[in-house]
Length: 262
Image (cartoon, rainbow, N blue to C red):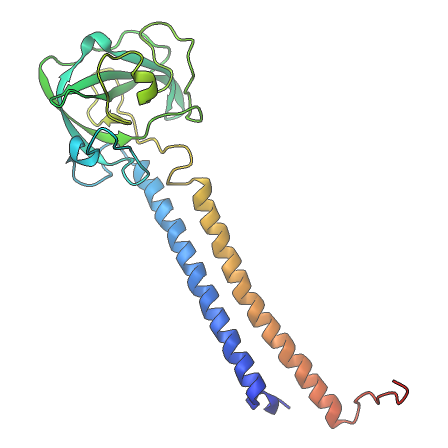
């Protein structure tokens, strides 16, 4: 009853179906790998400060040149910067949450030898902005994780309306209004926070890597490709069964008799 499977038409159709299944499974596996990569990035960035990003690299080598920007591939990268803290222009950044509690960042510009400054968040404190520990004097070397500039979609960021000494959004566009010197893109979350402050964990940018919409799109595509593969298998078995039933009907003489009038 199933000898029709050995005919050229069915051999060709079966081969085509197998190719389609293999392609769907490979594409689904690739999308699943992309999702797992993004999930791994999310887990690494949620780890304790200083544990992700590999060996620290000089900030100038990661952001090489005035036009260099922090990207999804450098968020959370461990970097080092050497310079002098500008204690007179220390800023408090309110409305920032750590471990489910709302507080504020303590941001101090670190002026480097090339004339630019990097915004260093030395730590976080709970509650409303208040007194913050002063930065160390003299030349210091800071190790921390590179962060993307904040924008209107960042958690806690505000456009303005804050008292002097506070900053609503950490970005070059806002820092240029309060600092008399150029700054690097993004900011650095210091690994070692002074007494009374908590080190800030890596913050993924809006729409960046990690568990973003893009990650769940990868998961959705994975399911789609696997469903396509299953659909090909289902249709093959359905066609085989229909062909087998038709062959059985012909063997029993149950084929419908064509109407001469048609």
